[in-house]
Image 1 (cartoon, rainbow, N blue to C red):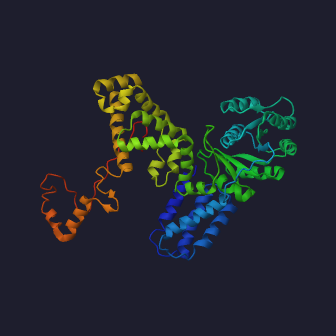
Image 2: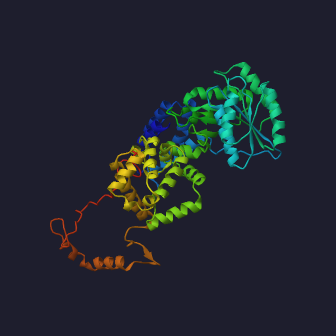
Length: 497
């Protein structure tokens, strides 16, 4: 969603590199580019003015510090001010001392209220709570049935009756007390546009249930219309926060950057995909970091902790170091990575990922070809891929619907990945830079002392036409051989290009 805005910011910051002091004219030029980028992203005009003015006041006359150059200083200031515009601090959900905690969801039709009711219920489950979903949307056909279907997927009970929405919401509180549910999530009816009937109905439900939290579900794809509807609902319901949906879309992202300053209420949760797991508590600093192309390592760690067991991860790392990492280990790891969410969004969370890799079109369905090839191997072949010869490749290809050369490529790149990961984690193939206690290894210290005593020139005499006397290739002065990394994907595997 924020790709265009991210590219704009990166272009602005690159112009400020190498300067010892930020002059007023340089700041004006940078702020002009930032202002244009924000307006193109459909950010509210008043928010743009407020944000750029705060950046100007903090940036003009900034001296080059010892640790940061002007570009880095501007990045730091913009990051902090973007975080402020997005809400500053995450909204922490506190539960009532006397259950149940009532959460009311409102919004226009088509914003994803019903689906996000279930996503929120699953989030509460992960917090150790026992939620109850309430189907108070009796206007839209099959809305309650949709809620029951999704609720059954996460094993959360759903309460509803074909009577009156206010009556359903009232009886749901008694049902929660009787069944031992400590969180009640009420899904209310929406309309295609804001009207008095809808506002009256949701206001009556709110007065009856006295919710501890009232969240408005808004579609990030609708831009400033989302902010307008949020203002209208806030006048009736006194919102506590906003649930922003479809953050994985290709809209410009102005709603996310505008809603807090315009409405005065923070974004509480963000829906980042269609799956029920694609739902997370909103952290303003993390989204600001993503917008500026700095990644979001904290969210990435949170996602990893949800799917990877610490003991299993430790064992897999040990096998990588030992060189005994198998196709079974790789398949298990790949499946857990896919559980973390969309691969494209995961790449955007990684700091230092280049623009080309961030924009890579990753077809997750093609990863099924890799799974098919691995599943077509015998247990012995998966643990010892070195035994796979031409006839075995032919059999694996026939069993997975692939070509033998695809199987050969997979095996070769798997071996390269295993060697590369062993080198990265283990500290180098020869270990010649490993320390022994507090001393560097004898081989390294001996060579260093040899050159320091002036005998290094003897080594130059061995070079003849780019080769030394032992026949090894000598790299020309000023160059360094690039490490060979398999092309086509982050791991160099077929189907990831």
